[in-house]
Image 1 (cartoon, rainbow, N blue to C red):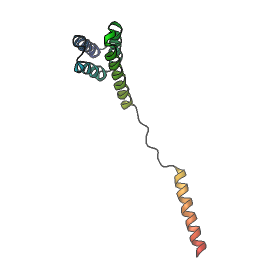
Image 2: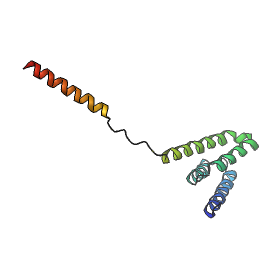
Image 3: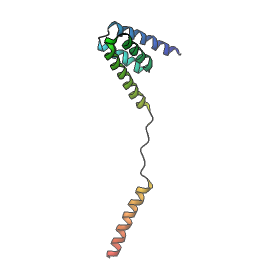
Image 4: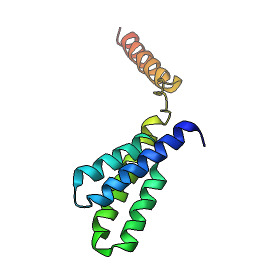
Length: 113
């Protein structure tokens, strides 16, 4: 594990200590979740909430809500980074249709004269 990763995991642990000290404070949860997502520590964060739900059934609802928040934000972050498909260029088929319509129009004009 790199030095930066270790620092981030240590910071996550400190933020988690704040969560456990202020379990009913929504802002503390949001700060923890934001840090976990920003530093791509999704699994360790979700695991902490799973452990909280297992040992404290009274906090199961908040733990599940925060797990979903982490998963949703992680998915959004991953999809935002995904390469996008280039817009399709208008194909030869469309050009042939246009040329065919023009040809038909010219043919009708010539027959009318």
